[in-house]
Image 1 (cartoon, rainbow, N blue to C red):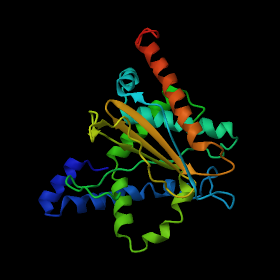
Image 2: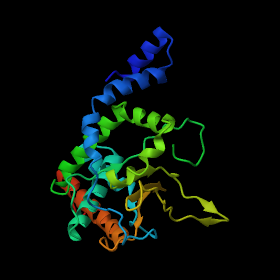
Image 3: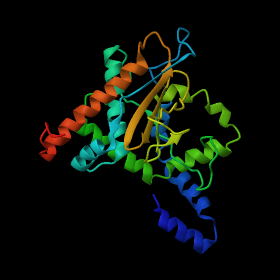
Image 4: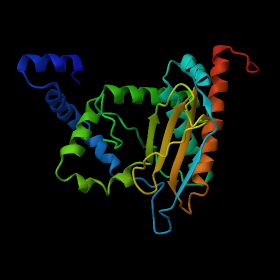
Length: 269
């Protein structure tokens, strides 16, 4: 992969815009990953939307998680807030699949949106359970760092935006991923409307298609609430409310382990 600094250097020397250089390098390096990507298109087995499923939705959300508490596992394991949240979310989903005897896939695949939005663009449109908690956290951290440094997301974005046959890919999306997980940063301070304090924000996140999770990680006034959104499916009872509860219990488990590793008294407030 050519670093972005070198891409800009090549662009200035050859007078080719940096985004075109990025596009060319995305094709070159992204193409090497196509064989691995094509394996994904075999489709998932869990969360399939069938004739017994309903287009009616269910929405639930977690108890609030203090951002100050998230700082403890971040310090203990050298990871980001997103790493922590994606770890406990992925484990919660896998635990739920085990509870309902629907853990049918070897890997859990969640789409994580990457913003290609310009600074002043305010439009509303959006252009594994057997591992220990710490092992999962390290794995998520590694994958997220690789994703942030990769040009492959740029290639996918350009293909979706400019490919004349992009509508042909739409039926595929619900079959290859288990959901979408998106982080929505909110205000640091409490907001008021008509002199009334807004106590909580709940996000209704997008799905990758019928049957897929929509998971919103929304921060507000020093706390985080995770919303879980999905279709009503007979094989997955109480899917939203149960996953939300497992997210809270999973975070408490991670927080307890992080406190032990840092030598913090578990009875300490």
